[in-house]
Image 1 (cartoon, helix red, strand yellow):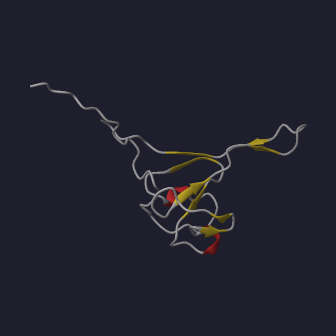
Image 2 (image 1 turned 135 degrees about the horizontal axis):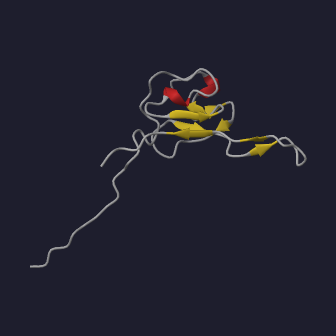
Image 3 (image 1 turned 180 degrees about the vertical axis):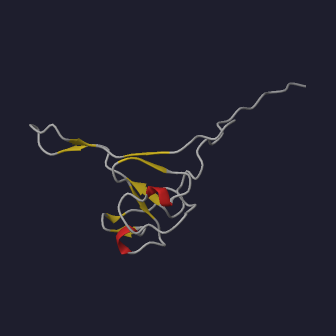
Length: 101
């Protein structure tokens, strides 16, 4: 008999689809309303169907977007600048702690 060791990737992110909600988002930068997620820079947004029209999902102030899985998602600006001659860059970051194996 031959035995084969099967390996697979274990999901290390808690609440990867932003479904676990601490409260419904009502303002910009409320990614912390999604359980286990942190706002690491500026104002990353959280979109959830329980929210008002501005931060609801899939319809919200930014338009229409279905979630990749579940019904909720995060929105953030990865990079923008005022003008080519400007020294002002803007980036938003979110983060979470990884599960311990």
